[in-house]
Image 1 (cartoon, rainbow, N blue to C red):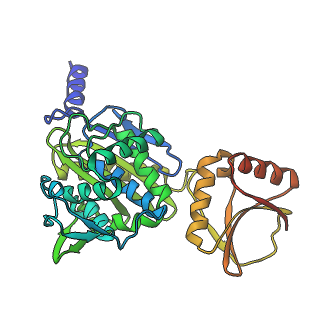
Image 2 (image 1 turned 90 degrees about the vertical axis):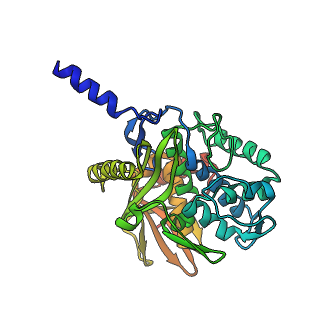
Image 3 (image 1 turned 45 degrees about the vertical axis):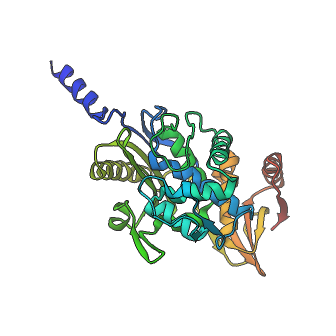
Length: 354
């Protein structure tokens, strides 16, 4: 009888009265190693977590210089007709791309999502095609997008694991944009907007990628924790309230952050050193950039693409106006093997004697 009662309690706890299964994934966004999962591949309505893909595309357009932060984004009649949450910008009025990004993250503005979709692709329909092409490219196997904002639509589906993978790609591909997800307020057209993610105000180590809610899916969140060199990403679907969602994701994040802090070999550690003679005989130079942020990003790329490089210490030194990333090794054979692995991935490297 006791076993039956416990089983019944578990079933109740993993089911939402909002007709949505609870689903969660906790893991390392850099290595994509999963520490905890419940119903990770169950399809569900992603609600405003949909905007993570819209943001990914915006960041990619900026990277390719197809967009500029100062570009104007005009609001069509169709954009102004979107349901709340929205900015309420008048038809033919505009905001900048810079303001629009903040409005998607902080206000979760549905009218802004349509406006940027129309700017990038000419129409919402064409932008949705782009979203689904990106989803295929990023291996989001349980995801189909039907709009750029996440308002209710039976065809707009994703899973906790796919949102984990998509959020991880934002973190790895656009680390220079992460500061935006830390913001708690923004002023647009003289109006002040405050984030829906109250965890950002309570805990300094959190970066709030996105929150979401529609009735059929419950309260959701994609949440990043950065503590020194330790990264932890948590996805939670199916909260009955914002408070319940926040309490559960915070509990899970604390649990797995404490377990894995400083223990994962995939955790990226950077050492910035002055130019000194190394005790190793050889070094493999992996990059040379004028900005240290690009060197760090390249090290992340290497460690995610090439597993063997995760067990080596990656260092950065400044030489003139450049930041050089490199790995010290004891012999030429090891250096050559590492360099060959890097070149197999169509990346550059250079072997140097110390």
